Length: 496
Ligand code: GLN
Image 1: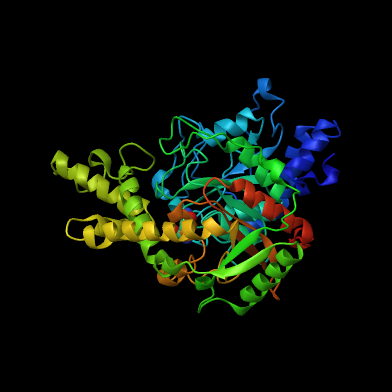
Image 2 (image 1 turned 90 degrees about the horizontal axis):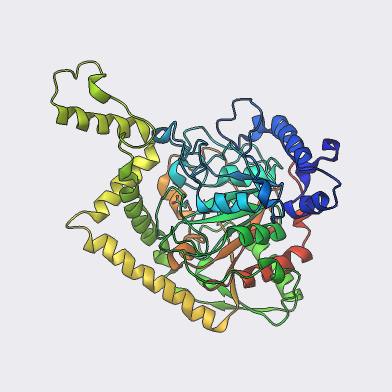
Protein backbone atom coordinates (compact mmCIF):
# COMPACT_ATOMS: atom_id res chain seq x y z
CA UNK A 1 0.00 0.00 0.00
CA UNK A 2 2.89 2.36 0.61
CA UNK A 3 3.29 2.70 -3.20
CA UNK A 4 0.31 5.07 -2.87
CA UNK A 5 2.57 7.61 -1.17
CA UNK A 6 0.20 7.90 1.75
CA UNK A 7 2.49 10.46 3.38
CA UNK A 8 1.18 13.00 0.86
CA UNK A 9 -2.37 12.89 2.21
CA UNK A 10 -3.95 15.01 4.91
CA UNK A 11 -5.28 13.50 8.14
CA UNK A 12 -8.92 13.77 7.07
CA UNK A 13 -8.20 12.10 3.71
CA UNK A 14 -6.38 9.28 5.48
CA UNK A 15 -9.28 8.91 7.92
CA UNK A 16 -11.58 8.32 4.92
CA UNK A 17 -9.25 5.69 3.51
CA UNK A 18 -9.06 4.00 6.90
CA UNK A 19 -12.83 4.12 7.31
CA UNK A 20 -13.44 2.46 3.97
CA UNK A 21 -10.77 -0.12 4.86
CA UNK A 22 -8.82 0.79 1.76
CA UNK A 23 -5.72 1.06 3.96
CA UNK A 24 -4.52 0.16 7.45
CA UNK A 25 -2.80 2.45 9.92
CA UNK A 26 0.44 0.45 9.50
CA UNK A 27 0.47 1.43 5.82
CA UNK A 28 0.57 5.09 6.81
CA UNK A 29 3.40 4.50 9.28
CA UNK A 30 5.39 2.59 6.68
CA UNK A 31 4.87 5.26 4.05
CA UNK A 32 5.77 8.07 6.46
CA UNK A 33 8.92 6.22 7.58
CA UNK A 34 9.99 5.82 3.95
CA UNK A 35 9.44 9.51 3.30
CA UNK A 36 11.46 10.49 6.34
CA UNK A 37 14.30 8.21 5.26
CA UNK A 38 14.19 9.85 1.83
CA UNK A 39 14.18 13.55 2.75
CA UNK A 40 15.16 13.99 6.39
CA UNK A 41 18.88 14.28 5.67
CA UNK A 42 18.06 17.47 3.75
CA UNK A 43 15.38 18.96 5.99
CA UNK A 44 16.47 17.88 9.51
CA UNK A 45 13.03 18.53 11.00
CA UNK A 46 13.30 15.84 13.69
CA UNK A 47 15.75 15.50 16.56
CA UNK A 48 17.36 12.39 18.10
CA UNK A 49 16.42 10.33 15.03
CA UNK A 50 19.87 8.68 14.78
CA UNK A 51 19.07 6.83 11.57
CA UNK A 52 16.82 4.41 13.43
CA UNK A 53 13.29 3.48 12.54
CA UNK A 54 10.54 5.75 13.76
CA UNK A 55 8.92 4.80 17.02
CA UNK A 56 5.27 5.48 17.87
CA UNK A 57 3.29 5.37 21.06
CA UNK A 58 1.02 2.37 21.13
CA UNK A 59 -2.65 2.79 20.36
CA UNK A 60 -5.28 2.62 23.06
CA UNK A 61 -7.51 -0.19 21.75
CA UNK A 62 -10.65 1.13 23.47
CA UNK A 63 -10.52 4.36 21.51
CA UNK A 64 -10.60 3.04 17.99
CA UNK A 65 -13.55 5.25 17.03
CA UNK A 66 -11.62 8.45 17.76
CA UNK A 67 -11.44 11.41 15.38
CA UNK A 68 -7.76 10.80 14.68
CA UNK A 69 -7.75 7.05 14.96
CA UNK A 70 -4.65 5.58 13.32
CA UNK A 71 -3.20 8.97 12.30
CA UNK A 72 0.43 9.68 13.25
CA UNK A 73 0.97 13.11 14.82
CA UNK A 74 4.40 14.69 15.29
CA UNK A 75 5.18 16.77 18.38
CA UNK A 76 7.39 19.76 19.13
CA UNK A 77 10.18 18.98 21.62
CA UNK A 78 8.70 21.21 24.38
CA UNK A 79 5.46 19.20 24.88
CA UNK A 80 5.76 16.47 27.51
CA UNK A 81 5.33 12.88 26.34
CA UNK A 82 5.43 10.20 29.00
CA UNK A 83 8.65 8.20 28.94
CA UNK A 84 9.76 9.80 25.67
CA UNK A 85 12.57 12.37 25.65
CA UNK A 86 11.34 15.99 25.85
CA UNK A 87 14.33 18.31 25.88
CA UNK A 88 13.18 21.66 24.42
CA UNK A 89 16.18 21.25 22.12
CA UNK A 90 18.36 22.41 25.01
CA UNK A 91 21.45 20.78 26.44
CA UNK A 92 20.19 21.51 29.95
CA UNK A 93 17.27 19.09 29.52
CA UNK A 94 19.39 16.31 28.04
CA UNK A 95 18.00 12.96 29.09
CA UNK A 96 14.72 14.32 30.50
CA UNK A 97 11.91 11.79 30.04
CA UNK A 98 8.75 13.26 31.57
CA UNK A 99 6.78 10.95 33.87
CA UNK A 100 3.47 12.16 32.41
CA UNK A 101 1.77 13.22 29.18
CA UNK A 102 0.75 16.81 28.48
CA UNK A 103 -3.04 17.13 28.35
CA UNK A 104 -2.93 17.64 24.57
CA UNK A 105 -1.00 14.37 24.19
CA UNK A 106 -3.51 12.54 26.37
CA UNK A 107 -6.35 13.93 24.27
CA UNK A 108 -4.65 12.99 21.00
CA UNK A 109 -4.10 9.45 22.26
CA UNK A 110 -7.71 9.25 23.40
CA UNK A 111 -8.75 10.27 19.88
CA UNK A 112 -6.71 7.33 18.58
CA UNK A 113 -3.74 9.30 17.23
CA UNK A 114 -0.30 7.69 17.19
CA UNK A 115 2.32 9.91 18.79
CA UNK A 116 5.75 9.92 17.19
CA UNK A 117 8.43 9.29 19.78
CA UNK A 118 10.92 11.23 17.70
CA UNK A 119 10.23 14.91 18.36
CA UNK A 120 10.41 18.02 16.20
CA UNK A 121 13.20 20.57 16.19
CA UNK A 122 12.72 24.06 17.68
CA UNK A 123 14.66 27.02 18.97
CA UNK A 124 15.92 26.23 22.47
CA UNK A 125 12.98 26.74 24.87
CA UNK A 126 11.09 28.30 21.90
CA UNK A 127 13.35 31.38 21.97
CA UNK A 128 13.65 32.47 18.37
CA UNK A 129 12.19 32.98 14.92
CA UNK A 130 14.43 30.72 12.82
CA UNK A 131 15.14 27.40 14.63
CA UNK A 132 18.81 28.40 14.54
CA UNK A 133 18.91 28.42 18.36
CA UNK A 134 18.44 24.64 18.67
CA UNK A 135 21.06 22.58 20.48
CA UNK A 136 20.65 20.04 17.66
CA UNK A 137 21.38 22.45 14.79
CA UNK A 138 19.17 24.19 12.28
CA UNK A 139 16.21 22.80 10.30
CA UNK A 140 16.13 23.62 6.58
CA UNK A 141 13.19 25.13 4.74
CA UNK A 142 11.85 22.48 2.31
CA UNK A 143 11.15 25.18 -0.32
CA UNK A 144 14.75 26.36 -0.28
CA UNK A 145 17.23 24.42 1.81
CA UNK A 146 19.48 27.48 2.20
CA UNK A 147 16.68 29.27 4.08
CA UNK A 148 15.38 28.97 7.64
CA UNK A 149 11.98 27.33 8.20
CA UNK A 150 11.03 30.09 10.64
CA UNK A 151 10.68 29.48 14.35
CA UNK A 152 10.46 28.53 16.96
CA UNK A 153 8.26 25.64 15.68
CA UNK A 154 10.47 25.35 12.59
CA UNK A 155 10.70 21.55 12.82
CA UNK A 156 6.90 21.24 12.98
CA UNK A 157 6.32 23.47 9.93
CA UNK A 158 9.14 21.98 7.85
CA UNK A 159 8.04 18.40 8.60
CA UNK A 160 4.45 19.10 7.51
CA UNK A 161 5.60 20.99 4.38
CA UNK A 162 8.02 18.19 3.42
CA UNK A 163 5.35 15.51 3.98
CA UNK A 164 7.50 14.12 6.79
CA UNK A 165 4.53 14.56 9.13
CA UNK A 166 0.81 14.20 8.53
CA UNK A 167 0.11 16.90 11.11
CA UNK A 168 2.06 18.41 13.99
CA UNK A 169 1.72 20.33 17.22
CA UNK A 170 3.70 23.47 17.91
CA UNK A 171 3.59 26.26 20.49
CA UNK A 172 3.16 29.99 19.95
CA UNK A 173 4.31 32.61 22.46
CA UNK A 174 4.87 35.43 19.99
CA UNK A 175 4.33 33.88 16.58
CA UNK A 176 6.10 30.52 16.76
CA UNK A 177 3.31 28.61 15.03
CA UNK A 178 2.17 31.24 12.52
CA UNK A 179 5.53 32.53 11.30
CA UNK A 180 7.02 29.09 10.48
CA UNK A 181 3.67 28.07 8.95
CA UNK A 182 3.94 31.15 6.71
CA UNK A 183 7.61 30.46 5.82
CA UNK A 184 6.88 26.79 4.95
CA UNK A 185 3.48 27.17 3.25
CA UNK A 186 1.35 25.24 5.75
CA UNK A 187 -1.60 26.10 8.01
CA UNK A 188 -0.81 27.08 11.62
CA UNK A 189 -3.21 28.27 14.33
CA UNK A 190 -2.54 29.97 17.64
CA UNK A 191 -5.73 29.44 19.64
CA UNK A 192 -7.23 31.92 22.12
CA UNK A 193 -5.31 31.98 25.41
CA UNK A 194 -7.09 29.46 27.64
CA UNK A 195 -8.69 27.42 24.81
CA UNK A 196 -6.06 24.65 24.81
CA UNK A 197 -4.52 23.33 28.02
CA UNK A 198 -0.89 24.27 28.68
CA UNK A 199 -0.47 21.46 31.19
CA UNK A 200 2.68 19.63 30.14
CA UNK A 201 3.92 22.39 27.84
CA UNK A 202 7.35 23.35 29.16
CA UNK A 203 6.75 27.03 29.91
CA UNK A 204 8.45 29.87 28.08
CA UNK A 205 6.17 32.81 29.02
CA UNK A 206 3.14 31.44 30.80
CA UNK A 207 0.81 34.38 30.09
CA UNK A 208 1.48 34.18 26.33
CA UNK A 209 2.08 30.48 25.50
CA UNK A 210 -0.50 28.42 23.60
CA UNK A 211 -0.22 25.03 21.91
CA UNK A 212 -1.72 24.74 18.43
CA UNK A 213 -1.79 22.66 15.24
CA UNK A 214 0.37 22.90 12.10
CA UNK A 215 -1.34 21.07 9.27
CA UNK A 216 -1.53 20.60 5.51
CA UNK A 217 -4.95 22.21 5.20
CA UNK A 218 -7.62 24.11 7.12
CA UNK A 219 -9.83 21.04 7.65
CA UNK A 220 -7.02 19.18 9.42
CA UNK A 221 -6.40 22.24 11.59
CA UNK A 222 -10.09 22.25 12.64
CA UNK A 223 -9.97 18.51 13.23
CA UNK A 224 -6.93 18.69 15.52
CA UNK A 225 -8.50 21.66 17.35
CA UNK A 226 -11.64 19.60 17.97
CA UNK A 227 -9.43 17.06 19.71
CA UNK A 228 -7.05 19.23 21.75
CA UNK A 229 -9.33 22.12 22.86
CA UNK A 230 -11.29 22.34 26.07
CA UNK A 231 -11.22 22.93 29.79
CA UNK A 232 -8.55 21.25 31.88
CA UNK A 233 -8.54 21.49 35.68
CA UNK A 234 -4.76 20.91 35.54
CA UNK A 235 -4.27 24.33 33.91
CA UNK A 236 -5.61 27.18 36.03
CA UNK A 237 -5.73 29.49 33.00
CA UNK A 238 -7.77 27.06 30.95
CA UNK A 239 -11.27 28.38 30.29
CA UNK A 240 -14.39 26.36 31.05
CA UNK A 241 -16.38 26.95 27.87
CA UNK A 242 -17.99 24.48 25.51
CA UNK A 243 -15.93 23.59 22.45
CA UNK A 244 -17.86 23.89 19.19
CA UNK A 245 -17.31 21.50 16.28
CA UNK A 246 -14.81 23.58 14.33
CA UNK A 247 -15.30 21.56 11.14
CA UNK A 248 -18.89 22.93 11.02
CA UNK A 249 -17.41 26.35 10.04
CA UNK A 250 -15.74 24.96 6.92
CA UNK A 251 -17.20 25.57 3.47
CA UNK A 252 -19.47 28.45 4.56
CA UNK A 253 -19.27 31.58 2.43
CA UNK A 254 -17.98 34.90 3.75
CA UNK A 255 -20.35 37.15 1.84
CA UNK A 256 -21.09 40.34 3.75
CA UNK A 257 -18.30 39.87 6.30
CA UNK A 258 -16.31 42.96 7.31
CA UNK A 259 -12.55 42.84 7.72
CA UNK A 260 -10.15 45.34 9.25
CA UNK A 261 -6.66 46.07 7.89
CA UNK A 262 -4.36 47.71 10.48
CA UNK A 263 -2.61 50.64 8.83
CA UNK A 264 0.29 50.52 11.30
CA UNK A 265 1.40 47.20 9.79
CA UNK A 266 2.42 48.79 6.50
CA UNK A 267 5.58 50.41 7.65
CA UNK A 268 9.22 50.59 6.75
CA UNK A 269 10.92 47.22 6.73
CA UNK A 270 8.09 45.43 4.96
CA UNK A 271 9.29 43.72 1.81
CA UNK A 272 7.35 45.18 -1.20
CA UNK A 273 6.75 41.64 -2.45
CA UNK A 274 4.93 40.81 0.79
CA UNK A 275 2.83 43.94 0.38
CA UNK A 276 1.85 42.91 -3.17
CA UNK A 277 0.96 39.39 -2.14
CA UNK A 278 -1.17 40.76 0.69
CA UNK A 279 -2.96 43.18 -1.67
CA UNK A 280 -3.74 40.28 -4.02
CA UNK A 281 -5.15 38.29 -1.11
CA UNK A 282 -7.42 41.23 -0.29
CA UNK A 283 -8.65 41.27 -3.89
CA UNK A 284 -9.54 37.63 -3.54
CA UNK A 285 -11.40 38.31 -0.28
CA UNK A 286 -13.37 41.03 -2.07
CA UNK A 287 -14.30 38.62 -4.86
CA UNK A 288 -15.73 36.33 -2.21
CA UNK A 289 -18.22 39.04 -1.31
CA UNK A 290 -16.60 40.49 1.82
CA UNK A 291 -15.47 44.06 2.42
CA UNK A 292 -12.42 45.50 4.12
CA UNK A 293 -11.43 48.82 5.56
CA UNK A 294 -8.29 50.34 7.00
CA UNK A 295 -8.27 50.73 10.80
CA UNK A 296 -5.79 51.91 13.41
CA UNK A 297 -4.16 49.85 16.15
CA UNK A 298 -2.33 52.85 17.57
CA UNK A 299 -0.21 51.01 20.13
CA UNK A 300 1.33 48.61 17.58
CA UNK A 301 4.62 50.49 17.80
CA UNK A 302 5.02 49.32 21.39
CA UNK A 303 4.29 45.66 20.72
CA UNK A 304 7.88 44.49 20.18
CA UNK A 305 9.37 46.23 23.25
CA UNK A 306 6.42 45.23 25.47
CA UNK A 307 6.63 41.62 24.32
CA UNK A 308 10.39 41.36 24.86
CA UNK A 309 10.02 42.72 28.39
CA UNK A 310 7.05 40.55 29.40
CA UNK A 311 8.28 37.40 27.64
CA UNK A 312 11.83 37.57 28.97
CA UNK A 313 10.64 38.41 32.51
CA UNK A 314 8.42 35.33 32.57
CA UNK A 315 11.08 33.20 30.89
CA UNK A 316 13.74 34.16 33.44
CA UNK A 317 11.40 33.06 36.21
CA UNK A 318 10.30 29.83 34.46
CA UNK A 319 13.86 28.84 33.65
CA UNK A 320 15.08 29.19 37.22
CA UNK A 321 13.88 25.62 37.85
CA UNK A 322 16.62 24.23 35.60
CA UNK A 323 19.42 24.17 38.14
CA UNK A 324 20.90 20.71 37.74
CA UNK A 325 18.93 19.31 40.68
CA UNK A 326 15.62 18.13 39.29
CA UNK A 327 15.84 17.85 35.52
CA UNK A 328 18.27 16.69 32.85
CA UNK A 329 21.85 17.84 32.90
CA UNK A 330 24.03 18.14 36.03
CA UNK A 331 27.66 19.21 35.89
CA UNK A 332 30.13 19.31 38.76
CA UNK A 333 28.25 17.35 41.37
CA UNK A 334 29.73 16.05 44.64
CA UNK A 335 33.24 17.22 44.05
CA UNK A 336 33.60 15.27 40.85
CA UNK A 337 35.12 18.21 39.09
CA UNK A 338 38.88 18.30 39.47
CA UNK A 339 40.11 20.85 41.97
CA UNK A 340 36.95 21.44 44.01
CA UNK A 341 37.47 18.78 46.68
CA UNK A 342 38.47 21.29 49.29
CA UNK A 343 35.29 23.41 48.87
CA UNK A 344 32.49 23.70 51.38
CA UNK A 345 29.22 21.95 50.56
CA UNK A 346 27.59 25.31 49.90
CA UNK A 347 30.28 26.40 47.49
CA UNK A 348 30.11 23.09 45.71
CA UNK A 349 26.34 23.52 45.28
CA UNK A 350 26.75 27.04 43.86
CA UNK A 351 29.51 25.74 41.66
CA UNK A 352 27.22 22.99 40.39
CA UNK A 353 24.47 25.54 39.58
CA UNK A 354 26.96 27.74 37.74
CA UNK A 355 28.50 24.97 35.73
CA UNK A 356 25.19 23.33 34.86
CA UNK A 357 23.47 26.56 33.80
CA UNK A 358 26.65 27.92 32.20
CA UNK A 359 27.08 24.90 29.98
CA UNK A 360 23.44 23.84 29.69
CA UNK A 361 21.85 27.01 28.31
CA UNK A 362 22.64 28.38 24.86
CA UNK A 363 23.46 32.00 24.10
CA UNK A 364 19.88 33.19 23.39
CA UNK A 365 18.54 31.56 26.56
CA UNK A 366 21.23 33.30 28.62
CA UNK A 367 20.48 36.63 26.94
CA UNK A 368 16.79 36.30 27.86
CA UNK A 369 17.45 35.21 31.43
CA UNK A 370 19.66 38.26 31.93
CA UNK A 371 17.18 40.65 30.28
CA UNK A 372 14.24 39.23 32.23
CA UNK A 373 16.05 39.23 35.56
CA UNK A 374 17.01 42.84 34.98
CA UNK A 375 13.48 44.08 34.26
CA UNK A 376 12.12 42.22 37.28
CA UNK A 377 14.80 43.48 39.64
CA UNK A 378 14.10 45.91 42.44
CA UNK A 379 14.56 49.43 41.13
CA UNK A 380 13.74 48.60 37.50
CA UNK A 381 10.50 46.67 37.99
CA UNK A 382 8.24 49.75 37.89
CA UNK A 383 10.06 51.38 35.02
CA UNK A 384 10.09 48.33 32.75
CA UNK A 385 7.95 45.36 33.76
CA UNK A 386 5.03 47.22 35.30
CA UNK A 387 4.95 49.77 32.51
CA UNK A 388 5.04 46.97 29.92
CA UNK A 389 2.01 45.36 31.59
CA UNK A 390 0.10 48.65 31.36
CA UNK A 391 0.91 49.08 27.68
CA UNK A 392 -0.08 45.46 27.13
CA UNK A 393 -3.58 46.39 28.30
CA UNK A 394 -3.64 49.29 25.84
CA UNK A 395 -2.71 46.90 23.03
CA UNK A 396 -5.56 44.61 24.03
CA UNK A 397 -7.96 47.58 24.15
CA UNK A 398 -6.98 48.49 20.58
CA UNK A 399 -8.12 45.04 19.42
CA UNK A 400 -11.34 45.14 21.47
CA UNK A 401 -12.28 48.44 19.82
CA UNK A 402 -11.73 47.05 16.30
CA UNK A 403 -13.69 43.86 16.96
CA UNK A 404 -16.75 45.93 17.91
CA UNK A 405 -17.16 46.81 14.24
CA UNK A 406 -15.39 44.04 12.33
CA UNK A 407 -15.58 40.25 12.05
CA UNK A 408 -11.83 39.74 11.77
CA UNK A 409 -8.52 41.43 11.07
CA UNK A 410 -6.43 40.50 8.02
CA UNK A 411 -2.68 41.04 8.09
CA UNK A 412 0.63 39.72 6.83
CA UNK A 413 2.42 37.22 9.11
CA UNK A 414 5.96 38.48 8.73
CA UNK A 415 7.57 41.48 6.97
CA UNK A 416 9.63 39.12 4.76
CA UNK A 417 9.52 35.59 3.40
CA UNK A 418 11.97 32.98 4.78
CA UNK A 419 15.46 34.46 5.09
CA UNK A 420 18.81 32.77 4.56
CA UNK A 421 20.29 30.63 7.32
CA UNK A 422 22.75 32.84 9.21
CA UNK A 423 21.35 36.11 7.81
CA UNK A 424 19.99 37.43 11.12
CA UNK A 425 21.64 35.04 13.56
CA UNK A 426 24.21 37.56 14.80
CA UNK A 427 21.75 40.43 15.17
CA UNK A 428 19.14 39.60 17.84
CA UNK A 429 17.42 42.99 17.54
CA UNK A 430 16.81 42.49 13.82
CA UNK A 431 15.41 39.05 14.59
CA UNK A 432 13.12 40.45 17.35
CA UNK A 433 11.80 43.22 15.07
CA UNK A 434 10.66 40.66 12.50
CA UNK A 435 8.01 39.45 15.00
CA UNK A 436 6.05 42.70 14.63
CA UNK A 437 2.86 41.20 13.10
CA UNK A 438 2.49 38.17 15.31
CA UNK A 439 3.26 39.13 18.90
CA UNK A 440 0.28 41.45 19.45
CA UNK A 441 -2.11 38.48 19.23
CA UNK A 442 -0.31 36.82 22.15
CA UNK A 443 -0.23 40.03 24.20
CA UNK A 444 -4.00 40.38 23.64
CA UNK A 445 -4.72 36.65 24.02
CA UNK A 446 -6.67 36.47 20.75
CA UNK A 447 -6.68 33.63 18.19
CA UNK A 448 -4.87 33.96 14.86
CA UNK A 449 -4.06 31.67 11.94
CA UNK A 450 -1.58 31.67 9.09
CA UNK A 451 -2.84 30.14 5.85
CA UNK A 452 -0.88 29.89 2.58
CA UNK A 453 -1.38 33.23 0.79
CA UNK A 454 0.95 33.18 -2.21
CA UNK A 455 4.57 32.90 -3.30
CA UNK A 456 7.45 35.28 -3.85
CA UNK A 457 9.16 35.41 -7.25
CA UNK A 458 11.86 33.23 -5.71
CA UNK A 459 9.16 30.61 -5.00
CA UNK A 460 9.04 31.01 -1.22
CA UNK A 461 5.64 30.68 0.47
CA UNK A 462 3.98 33.65 2.18
CA UNK A 463 1.14 33.35 4.70
CA UNK A 464 -2.03 35.38 5.19
CA UNK A 465 -2.90 36.05 8.83
CA UNK A 466 -6.51 36.11 10.08
CA UNK A 467 -7.11 37.33 13.65
CA UNK A 468 -10.42 37.28 15.53
CA UNK A 469 -11.78 38.14 18.94
CA UNK A 470 -11.28 35.76 21.89
CA UNK A 471 -12.87 32.32 21.34
CA UNK A 472 -13.90 33.19 17.78
CA UNK A 473 -11.84 30.39 16.22
CA UNK A 474 -14.99 29.48 14.28
CA UNK A 475 -14.84 32.80 12.41
CA UNK A 476 -11.16 32.17 11.63
CA UNK A 477 -11.95 28.72 10.25
CA UNK A 478 -14.80 30.06 8.14
CA UNK A 479 -12.64 32.75 6.53
CA UNK A 480 -9.56 30.52 6.19
CA UNK A 481 -11.55 27.77 4.54
CA UNK A 482 -13.29 30.12 2.08
CA UNK A 483 -9.94 31.64 1.13
CA UNK A 484 -8.30 28.23 0.83
CA UNK A 485 -10.99 26.99 -1.53
CA UNK A 486 -10.68 30.06 -3.74
CA UNK A 487 -6.89 29.99 -4.12
CA UNK A 488 -4.42 27.59 -5.80
CA UNK A 489 -1.60 27.71 -3.23
CA UNK A 490 -2.34 24.31 -1.75
CA UNK A 491 -1.54 22.52 -4.99
CA UNK A 492 2.10 23.60 -4.90
CA UNK A 493 4.71 21.33 -3.39
CA UNK A 494 8.34 21.85 -2.50
CA UNK A 495 10.76 19.87 -4.65
CA UNK A 496 12.91 17.72 -2.45
N1 GLN B 1 10.07 34.86 17.94
C1 GLN B 1 9.47 35.11 19.22
C2 GLN B 1 10.54 34.99 20.29
O1 GLN B 1 11.65 34.69 19.97
C3 GLN B 1 8.35 34.18 19.46
C4 GLN B 1 8.76 32.84 19.87
C5 GLN B 1 7.58 31.96 20.22
O2 GLN B 1 6.45 32.23 19.86
N2 GLN B 1 7.88 30.92 20.96
O3 GLN B 1 10.27 35.18 21.44
